[in-house]
Each structure stands twice: as C-alpha cells, then as structure tokens.
Image (cartoon, rainbow, N blue to C red; front, side):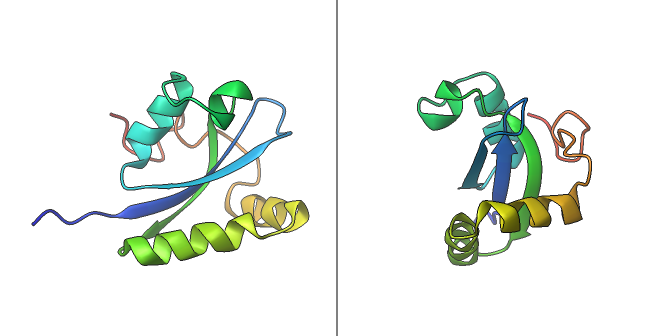
Length: 101
C-alpha cells in the first residue's frame, strides 16, 4: 500500500490580487500543472500559479477539513497566515521549497 502526504496550498497571481486554495497529494506536480495552464478553470483564467503557502497532512480528511477552514477565512486572515509563513510572498515552487516533477 502506497502512503501519501496531502497538501493544502495557496496560490496567487503576479499582482497578488487573487488567492486560490487547493488540496493535492502531489504538490510539485500540481504546481507544475498550474504553471503550465494544464488545469482548466479559475487558475488558468486568472493566471494563478505562484505557490505562496502550504501545509502537509498525513490524512486526506484532515487536509480537506483544513482546506474548507482556510476557504472560510476572510482575505485579511488569509494574508496574515501567508505573511507568517512566507513574508515576501516568494514563489516556493521556483525556490525549490518543494520537489519538482
């Protein structure tokens, strides 16, 4: 049986005007898909591909619960969370903070 880690992540666009929250079991692959515009929908439409925040979970139920919790946060609360984790809002994918595919 393969064991997975699950990630809740926040992406933004170049201007930091949009925040997107998602969940995945392969953060590097998912970030690559967003950057390459392989995922149709919101992130492709609004050019959202800059990884600025993530959390790691052992269980998918925990990750989904946290994703819903974060989605319920106000924008100000989301910004405070991101600032506490990644003050400069640098692209954690580009900086190699996760494993690339």
